[in-house]
Length: 356
Image 1 (spheres, rainbow, N blue to C red):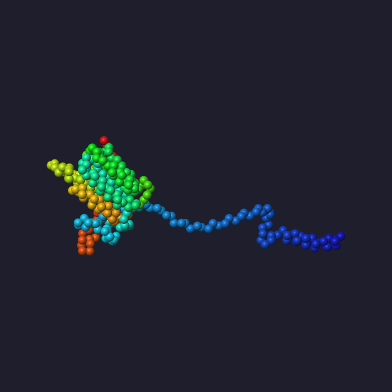
Image 2: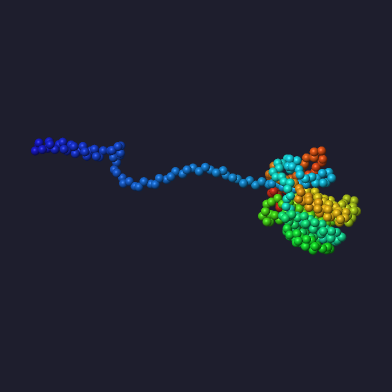
């Protein structure tokens, strides 16, 4: 029995050794109780960094467009000058020219014709001269015809159109009528219509805008004052050409006040000067045809110059504008004519209405 026990001892030792080895950690694994493993989560791909794109910030700048006429000492037009001959100043500060063109520019213009009794003798010739202007219209030009007498007799005889037949028909329908002349109101209305026309159609272009007003220049019945008219004109980009039949007005002046003729002439001259246009004072109706051709030529053969003002404050203030041009090769004097100034953005859209 003892011998049997001794024989079993080696077997027992070997069994214990095997059991011990099976329970020992393998390759450094923990001997902790086994835990049921859960499925490994799907690896999340690493997001590749996307380079940040440059952020484009839109900065709206105010491009000021000028229509510039250049004349010599004898008031003859000077054409064909390059950009380098011009300099622009705003409130005395030199400006960088950003846009320059000598090509013909389409024109939107208004014919504003006095139909009061003071033009009874001239109306027929005025209509003929107006038709000369219409005949020179280019395919993209558009014209509006406005007839005026007193403040309650200002009518649009023909809205803006390219159709020359319709324009001529509206001119043939003009007629003289009694009433006190309201030239200030008529010009005010015309400037608004011409200035707003392209904006109403949602277009941004470089069409030239002009008014050709025919009258004796004497105002007797306007709702707006002269000061309000010129305040509004400063905010528009409209050139005014005036044909004034002032010879029939009285030359008698008071101790302080100008004569009716002197006052009317000064008013028409100021309309042209402050907007970069020109005033004509015919002595006879025979001069009208030549004036019409000259206006037609000057409307289209001008210099279009644009600049971004260095003073970018939007404070609604008035800024004086001056354009200079170099003299000719032999020191011939050249004179640049354009509008007197502009009103910066940010101010009131229109002057306050005159109260009754």
